[in-house]
Amino acid sequence: MKKNILNIKGASVISKEAQRNISGGIGLPVDTSSCGCDCAGRVTGHPFCGFIIACPQVYTCNEEI
Image (tube, rainbow, N blue to C red; front, side):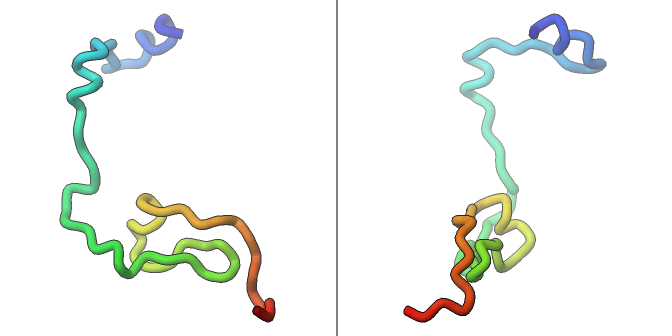
């Protein structure tokens, strides 16, 4: 596996300690209050919501409670 990774141009192997120190994210303050799920299990809200939350893939449209 390492052999294949090293064949990728610009790729390098980093230590486990260096991997633990990696941080990141979207980089902006994100308001997730607009994120949600619809009755078909699709993520709703801003385009970044799909990267932050996941919805159960259960179709509940037109069901009576």
